[in-house]
Image 1 (cartoon, rainbow, N blue to C red):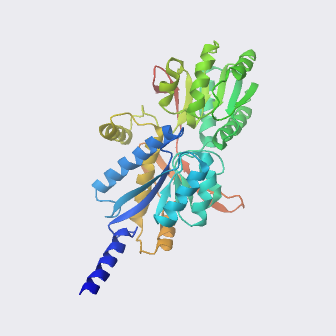
Image 2: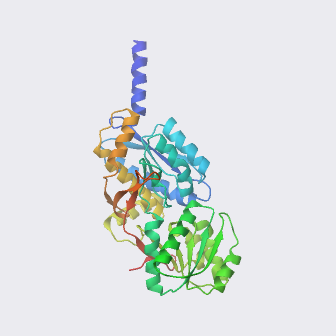
Length: 383
């Protein structure tokens, strides 16, 4: 009897740990930057995931099964992202995973998921080329290639700018990708560039670059930066008497700009599928729920994580997982591409991209951009 009891206990334990439908829960990995400079994005991402899982489980789970998040802090570093992915995939045996926070890290870690045939779903990676890594790579973060031309065109129409200066981080795949896409958009719109200046991640002084920019007398400054460098750039520009519009990318769409740049944060133009000002019922519900739980306003990164979890849950409802991890991971991969969802960030669907070998690869987001301008510590939608 003792032996029989031990065997039954072992079987029950294995059943509880199994990350499939029919078990007690489905294990989903999250690799996010919870410490370090990128935590200003990673912490809201974690909160967005946790809120969505709380709601989904409260409504009966995905296909009747509860979701369990297994969260790793990848610190916004390539090596830590790789280590987090390996732990989640091979030790925790998650069904799929979300992350990492930065595009730099995604370029390094996503190949680990692709090789292991495990879906990796990015919610904040917008640099070019990430989903071309392979057919297990997904994202609902709209690419800089799709967003930046819309932002630039709207700013040009509303401000009447004729020429711009460009300032970008040249040691980060995200900011370099932003520069490349801004450059192409400027060429397409036939907007001349008076000066192009660069900086590196961690820099704190930008007045030499800004002085050179000011000398060219541009009508606006196109800025591809993360907010850690972007905010002091705006502060130092205003100190030099440069009161021009800044036109930024995804990294500048964060309420942290109001905290870091304070009275110098006005007249920043950004584009995103999400805005706190969006009046849709889905967005209002998300904001109210987020505020109730966290006692603060959400940002774009929380909204995209929240929607991503619901997108994944819709895919999980479509499939019957069998308890064989390799086959179940493939079933998730096969179900996701056709999944559509209307959430806080608006209507969403996937489109497949071409890989580096010319064959079909991963999946990017198809969503409509909302262009906003900062004014009085708010992102105001530009209609």
